[in-house]
Image (cartoon, rainbow, N blue to C red; front, side):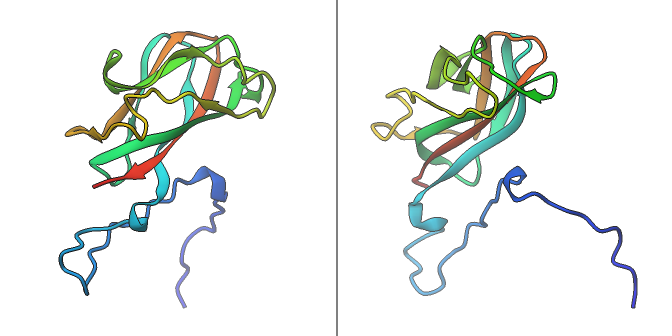
Length: 164
């Protein structure tokens, strides 16, 4: 018996689970499906930098080319690696760099991330919500910081409906 290598431990909530797109074998007109277009995680990023202004991260959209955004969750605020309030930081999310393209979350302060381990549901812009379809040839979201907070980070989770 050979040694399979070193043992590893994975904490479930640190992994964004991506289900593969599957083509149905019975109904050839159905096209590729993933979760039958249910609400799902569209994009996620951990430990996003809040310490400098401007575009701080490009968050890849997971397995979709047409989608609507229903919710954006900001969680796990930290300052210097310790869970803390990040209320003075201000962020926004767009489909293009430098606040271009469709606005997903307009520039807003993280006022409700007022305690360690707090969670904030951002207000999704009408342009990105269920009233519009985001079609993108470059499937990324751009995380922009408009008000910085020294040594701070947060996690972002974007949920929506895959319409592709």
